[in-house]
Image 1 (cartoon, rainbow, N blue to C red):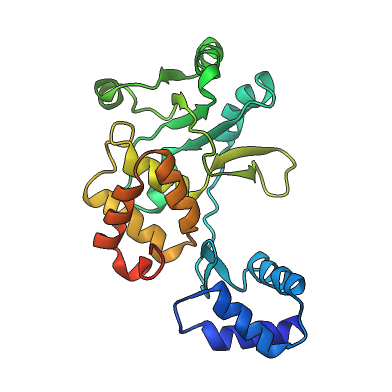
Image 2 (image 1 turned 90 degrees about the vertical axis):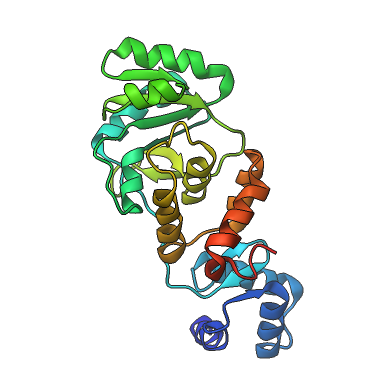
Length: 256
């Protein structure tokens, strides 16, 4: 039964761009007039979970063959996570490599570094723990001159305060591994690059445009998550304007 419904939904909505919950609910009710409200809610949740439809913001969906961005966790990144994961049990953190930006940009970064964000009350403790390991060059929320002059090595770690309720995902360090680490979602990466010209000085101007264009064209984006996080960074109005002015084809009817 579910496969039949899936095919009918694809046929009905694939060429329509985005559609809201009321439109979807009405269509599902036409297929099954006796469906209850609770069963309808479950069915929509199941459709999203199985990726038959993608939720681009609260109550708005699309039919899309775009991928979910799955960043590659290198052995070095996995090793680097062990200090924060083991010495600071239950600490909220987010770790990634700027090498991931090469998945989106036209000009590939020749050098890259790691970004480790932790709860603001633990920033100095984590900084000291990584400094004592003597395996890395560690920088505590560096300013522009330090970023451009010194933070240019793949053994460099930039430690910054983690903004509360940052969109993160838990990924395995290796395929089928039980060991997992917290890394940013694509929505967080995009907003961080847009908001922080100091840390991401190498990805500004046309390179940032390319980053967003590639992400919007090829990967699933949850715009509720994107805009909510932009608001956490006091950039909600600016990011909406940037997207509407530069990528209207991708965000039409979604940012309203």
